[in-house]
Image 1 (cartoon, rainbow, N blue to C red):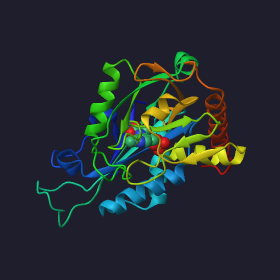
Image 2 (cartoon, helix red, strand yellow):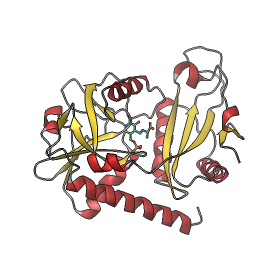
Image 3 (tube, helix red, strand yellow):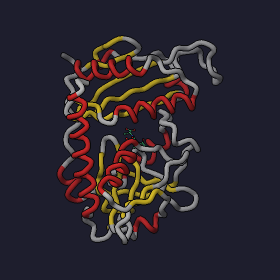
Image 4 (cartoon, protein in one colour):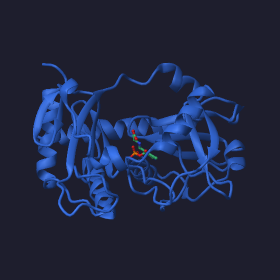
Length: 292
Ligand code: PDD
């Protein structure tokens, strides 16, 4: 079966799936999205992702296009039709189609699009050597907690990273403190072995991987702190890594061209990556048990 996408009630061949030119997502980036990992056919952290989706929609006063349970059924049907084992499902909801006018339309039904993507296992070299990040000014708006499709600053800094031969760009606020990556959360491990990531606020997207990893860290009894850290502190850190639904836990070994510690992925980073992979495998098993 060719790859399929879901658009407003219909499953279509991916190449034919489209929304109207006056969709407010296209005109104004007036919409939100989620990226939910799929591991061995099971959705990982489905409920927290849907909680965040509903929260983002609520902040923008966009209605859920259907009840949560129905959305979950569509997601499962799309995974089934695409025979997806490992990858992710992408969900995007916009305020809908209306004649172009900045104000909210009086009548518009939200647009719902879902697609799936297969992913390959992370390249061995990335895990063995770690990845490089560059630091860049954070030029985004002040509601980065909303998972909005308005990603132009994120696109620009990611491109800057790629052009610098780096994997990610860590954005930095006016006080010299790291906010987050273009599509990942940023972490360091301090000299005393504490895992540090910025506290959740309107300055960052509260990553679901970030939250799940914090739970793992708590359960395993590692030291952690949720607070901002500066670029200088990151460069002097014992270890660094980043998290997201597609990178999981990825070691960071270079910041702005300089090695983090000895330039090798650190022991806590490696342990946390393994704990997170085990956590994903456990989630998949639980999902299959309830027949999800
Ligand atoms: N990005 N910060 C930003 C700005 C993000 O866009 C993302 C996710 C994260 C990590 O969140 P999570 O752990 O829930 O994936 C942090 C997704 C993967 C993307 O845009 O593709």
